[in-house]
Image 1 (tube, one colour):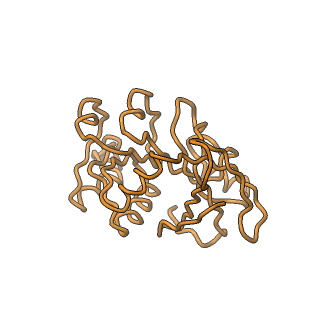
Image 2: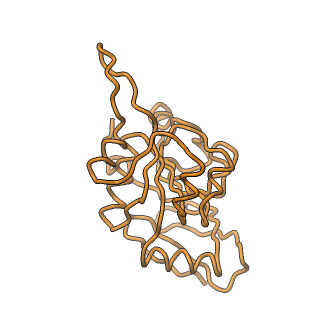
Length: 212
């Protein structure tokens, strides 16, 4: 038996009932017969995550691009605000090479959220976060970092993994004239986009915001 619960962000969470602690579940998505392997954590961990989401989830966001800002806007609009934002340092821009913050740093300062441009393990541990959420951060996290939070670290990846693994999935899909596009949410491990996929959703071409 499978129970579907919408999280209000456009992603359906699917909670299998009466299954072992960690179970690999295969489902058929609605009209488009696309088979996706989804991995779900159950029992105590699953209940604790849902309880935290219903109350107050203490989480840290890592990202640096316009796509990262799109994700942040969607989350904060639904009451999910990060306690800390980690992004990349300011970079020289223009003819005068003026140090310029990236879109995520600008967003964090505008919304009054703490922001740092370096990864400090001691500070992250002191944050006592339940979860790290990564979206287009631009750097590979070490195991000692992504295993800090209680519920580990999730990555929002703008493609239907595993086909477009790597640092530029959106550009790769455009150059390949890809028709089946979507988003994947996965657990981060030591590989490059090789962690267990928790959820995927296809989207129609043309309905996503233009971020280029």
